[in-house]
Image (tube, rainbow, N blue to C red):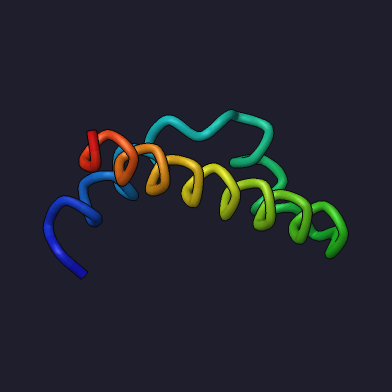
Length: 56
């Protein structure tokens, strides 16, 4: 993984919504799963957006 990708992921995780932070530590498996999936989609979106900007 290159430095740019690491930076994108780090900044995305730092800006994640508070509800995701709370649900990631929830005891309820369904809540944790929802938060994990949401965070994954946010990170994917950030990486895709950065890729589109680089292609421009």
